Amino acid sequence: MLVTKNLSFNYGKQNILDNVNFIAEKGQVISLIGPNGSGKSTLLRCLCGLIPVKRSSVFLFDRPIETLGAKEIARKVAFLPQSHERLQGVTVYELVSMGRAPYHRSGWVNTKEDQEKIAWAIDYMQIGHLTHRLAEMLSGGEKQRAWIAMVLAQDTPIILLDEPVTYMDLKYQCELLRTIKDLKDNFQKTVVAVFHDINHAIEISDSVYLLKNGHVYKAGGSEQVITEQAIKDVYGVYAHICKFKRCCRNVVVPAGVHDGSMDTPLENLQIK
Ligand SMILES: Nc1ncnc2c1ncn2[C@@H]1O[C@H](COP(=O)(O)OP(=O)(O)OP(=O)(O)O)[C@@H](O)[C@H]1O
Image 1: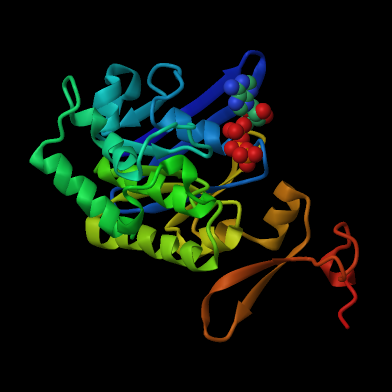
Image 2: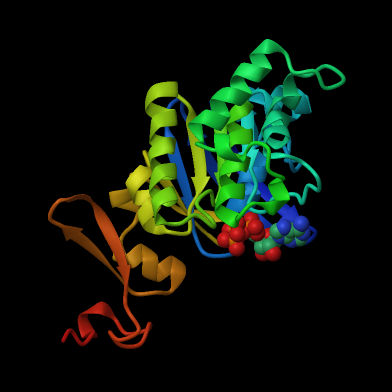
């Protein structure tokens, strides 16, 4: 569905992405993880045609992305950026409605189908009580849910989310992870999401891409990719990969401030 072949990208002379080979199939959840500045957001922006790429390095439904028009791409891929545009005087309902823009030829008249998709997205993200509020007046977490509703109203087979749990409290973080799983299980959506919390990536992903300095350090199932060695190599941090009873996934626990220095190998940490 969404593929990159030896994708490289520069800003000026700075090499940001280096020979990235990526593949997302229908109904998969794929996480991008890696340190600040490793190229995760840039990769997402290449995947939805927001930044121009070399010919035949990004393919959307088997077609080189540069051969598709902006609206055509936007009917296939929705993108939630890391930081949102500051929209003044726009209600939450109007914000969510903007997700329908790729389907409008000219002007702004919502068809019955548009209204149904908008209503579904609002209901799905549980923001019905916010629709008349100005988006700029919402709390960080409320705003994030409103923007995700806009992305869902776009009704695309592929959804790209850049740090979607930002600003959300624990309850909404858990709910958003469930939402992503539901979008995959019940709507066969393909979701590519950037996470800083590695445990979120472990919890939700069919595959994980671990980026380091613009290249893919490792990709695959989370158990293969996320190892203590990989975390040390990529983040420069010692971390424990733990298994807990009644928790059916690995849990990454970085060495704590009381365990010793961040540079202390795990085997030398003082366990009291
Ligand atoms: N518009 C731009 N012009 C020049 N350099 C840029 C631009 N946008 C990003 N960069 C640089 O590209 C590199 C990768 O940035 P990117 O935002 O893709 O990283 P990231 O992995 O998403 O980081 P973070 O986790 O901090 O969000 C960084 O060094 C950044 O400074």
